[in-house]
Amino acid sequence: MHRTPSPTAAFWLAAFTYFIWGFTFLASRVAQNYGSPFVLLFWRFALAFVLMNLLCLTGRFHVRLRGRDLRPVLLAGLFEPVLYFPCEQYGLKLTSTSFSGVMIALIPLCSLIYGAVFLREKATLQQVLFSVLSVAVFAGAAYMVASRACADSFSAFERTYVTCLMGAAAFGVLSLLEHRNDLRAVVQPMTHAPFVLAILFLSVVASVLSYIALNRALEVLPVARTAVLINLSTVVSVLTGVLILHEPFGWISAVASAAILVGIWGVQRFAAPPPPPRHERSLTQNIFTSEG
Image 1 (tube, rainbow, N blue to C red):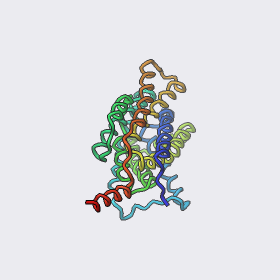
Image 2: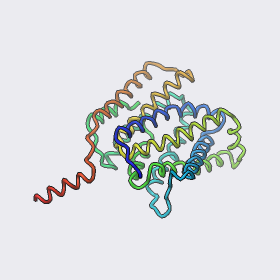
Image 3: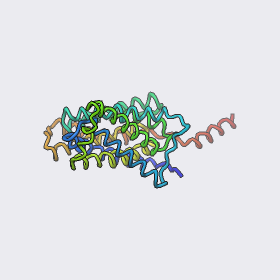
Image 4: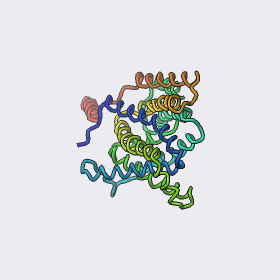
């Protein structure tokens, strides 16, 4: 039986996801030393898709897509990974790990707006102010909104399954086109141990485990509260860039990181009260109807 996580559990699932994603910039930087961004992304999502099929063979996980309206979940997969990840990877290739991490911080503000417009989720004035404060980001907002919108129709595992399938297919084609159908150029990076280790982390931990955790969290948490946690990725990516890759860390980065953490706290602290469960709303409506 599918059990919806509590708000507290959903919060920690989302926090786990974004903490892990903070290390993906470092892993991607390592992998890019051996292969292009499209090759990296193909192997990341191809191995993730293989793993998800192996999980299906255990009988504990199920994917039922035949005969269902797939447009909502396909839209989510189009936003992320198909549209989002190439921009992230090429941005990482052309800039530093810490700068790329900081740019991710526009997502919370965008998600706050998208959630209000498309999902009719209410945001308090305090949440808006703290989201603006946490903006040292912007990119996967559309995915979060689309994924939350179809959470009632598709399980977290099914949404992750489609995400990995779309990523493997799209980036497989793009990596072949990039290398003029030279399959050897796509396979060759897998002969290097650092590339393989980075891809295993990106596929198993950062794709399968993290996306399932995030999609579970989106079943409960409003988009604004979920998205602001992505700034944990920013802080982690900045720290890994500075401590491991020896990238510069000035006072601007320090202030931005502090603002991000305060912004995360503020959006969670001043969240609008959640609406009552549907059965409670129905009961209340029936009482007022009978009294009238």
